[in-house]
Length: 119
Image 1 (cartoon, rainbow, N blue to C red):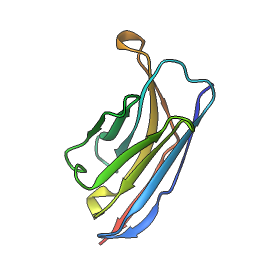
Image 2 (cartoon, helix red, strand yellow):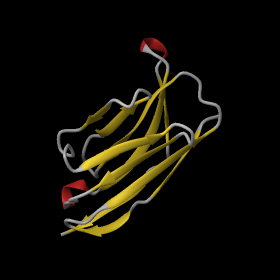
Image 3 (spheres, helix red, strand yellow):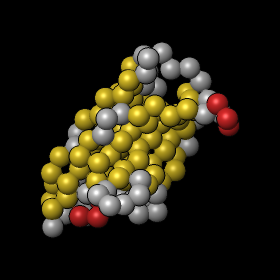
Image 4 (tube, helix red, strand yellow):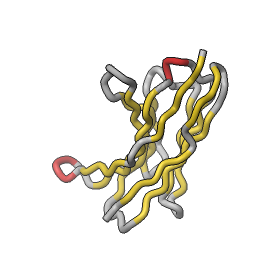
């Protein structure tokens, strides 16, 4: 059974930085990538960042240039360095592991970590 544990969330002032970590445990077959989504109250879930097993990255438009995703394959971990935070970044951040392809694609999710940016 795949389990993901996130850490690093918290309260920060506008312009500050936080680093989120997510470690996956269990046997993960056919992993294709890892990443982060976020969801703010009353808003739809949005992609923050994704990194493939080949280290190709993709970012949501609202975080590109401010956030950096990285991965440690040996630790089955993914990280999110968040800089120049603003109140619009306040949300619960969820990490995920993606496995399989096409109709066999499956995402495993963490429990989420709260990030709050004060103005």
